[in-house]
Length: 198
Image 1 (cartoon, helix red, strand yellow):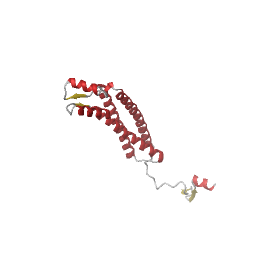
Image 2 (tube, rainbow, N blue to C red):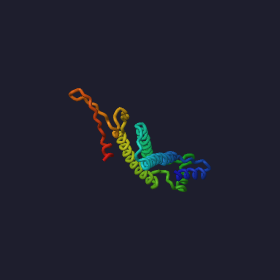
Image 3 (cartoon, helix red, strand yellow):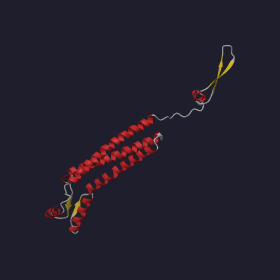
Image 4 (cartoon, rainbow, N blue to C red):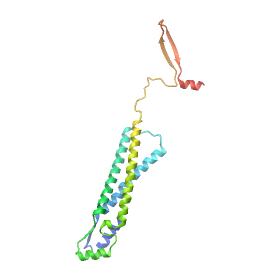
């Protein structure tokens, strides 16, 4: 990004702003390719620290769904940026206007790096390749996170606690009627109480 910005500045200063370099497309995709993957990295780092420091923490269904949406949106934005960067580097080039063709040739010979044709500069190719590696790993991480949150959502216990059920540590009085209509009381002690007494 800075190389192309410096190229534009040098050519415009050299020609007293008579020549204008048009390379905003690669500058814009460079800015996006820096910003959007950084957002994904920050999200994944935050998730990593939450898992590291609060491993048993449970969250609501709404939070899990919102988290899935944010991660999918960040990954989709990063993927769109990489596709746009690939198309621009493969098919586009910068251009110089405001001067005649001979002056353009002189300027490109004087300021030959970076070249106006984007796909002829190895740094641009390396940039796109590294972006694809990053986005593929980002997609894999997002898929794993989606599976983890879906599993967490499936295993959530949403049933409210029933106060009418006896506590497992408390004794229960069972009232029964025998054949002679006499009432008997049986005290049933839970397994936990028996273990404590042993």
